[in-house]
Amino acid sequence: MLCDLCKKNPAAIHIEKHNGENKTQLRVCLECAGVEGLTPENINGESLQKLINGVYSMQNKKTDSKCLTCDTDSETFERTGRVGCPDCYAYLSSSINLKSWQKTPHTKHIGKTPFNYEMNSDLIHKEVDHLKDLEDKLIICISEEDYEKAAILRDRIEEMKKATS
Amino acid sequence: MKPFLKELAAAPLPWLKSNDETSGIVISSRIRLARNIKNYQFPANLDSDIRAEVVDNVFEIIEKLPLRKLCKSFEVENLTDDEKKLLLERKVLTYESIVSEDCGIIIGNGENFSILLNEEDHIHIQTIKSGLKLESCWDEVENIDDMLSKSLDYAFSNDYGYLTASPANVGTGMKASVYLDLTASLLTGQLPGIKQACRLFGHVFIGENTEDDNYSGARFLISTRKTLGLTERAVIKEFSDFIKQVVDSELKARRKLIADHPEKLLNHISRAYGNLKYSCLLTEEEALELLYTLRTGTELSLFDKIGADQVNQVLVMSGDAHLQNALEASLDIESLDIARANYLKKQFKLI
Image (cartoon, rainbow over all chains, first blue to last red; front, side):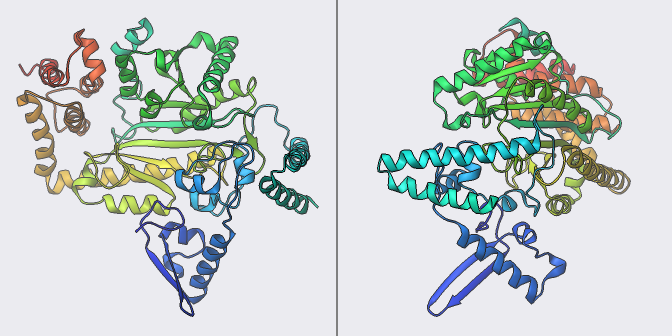
């Protein structure tokens, strides 16, 4: 049985959650458990509870998202393990669990940057550009009565505004 | 065969040399850097004409750089099957790049680097060197990356770094790997411990050409997993230190095996020699296995009928494409296996 999180390693920890008649099962490998703070030296009630909370909150976070640039959706990503374009990292952020992919709690890039890349100025321009781009797309979707896409865009714009405010 | 490739076919592999620092335990080191071009979707999502455009763009940029004098560019589709197989045997091309459409390959003179276009990502820059030389592999790869980065806009994000088709590569886009001969660890049952150590340190351990526990022979690949949260040099330093410990553990296992059960090791090596001497048909996989075992014997000074350099030289020539080029013949599978057995016997003066 493979780990429910990384879908690669054999599962080593089996967790069952009973809620009345509902029973949910979860299987996690040692590496993913380690990322959530559970190590062989640190098995106790508290660390197990932390693992369970972490895993369930991660599972609940998964939503049906879709990249508006290349149409890759979360289901396709989970099946293939590949994203379709650079923008997928923004649109499918709730589905891409980098901690689990890389077996590390650190998910910030601190390596080299491209030649002539100005970290801060580019960040500001990029985010403003991206937001403006999304708002333009929203107007187009509404005018074309594509309300499904428009709803995704609206949520994404709200998320971005919240994050930058 | 194109002249540049014909020359390659006759040349020894730059990443397969006898090396003293790790007693031949680290066969080779490899660094691969994944990059994608801004405003393009990743290759698997692109139509054929756009994929071709990506290849043309990179070829044009290379043409404008001083780098053009140091390499040769090819569209993979325009290569013959033998040429593709040759580059596969030399680890310049991958299986995926051969079956995919519109891939490109740029090979450095002397094979000091290669740039594969439109495989999983738009650009994979790779360097392979003999022995444990990850730092110098990185210097080479970084140099090429800097040159390209001046002319190409890469897909990059402040938080996630270089954006790649697989979230396993996002960040630095760098994977470091070493190819190891762990004969003594295998014979003394110490592999599970090495595997466990890899898992604890966050590295990936795989048997050659396999992604599970079905090891073929005693050669294994260990590669880095992390591409986020650490700089490239920090990953390389941490990984090199880890590999040095694996090398130490293999050295200890070798010494113990030679002291306690020399017949175990000798049996392993002599059987390979016997098979090589008496086989009339040898598949490519069998030949590689036998030759790598002899290589271990020569590195351990347990086998002196053939020199280490000679084994290395013959190792590359036993691949289908290299063999056909050496024999100047195009053969079917069975004839190839017969020819290979005879060729190896002749090389080692066994007939």
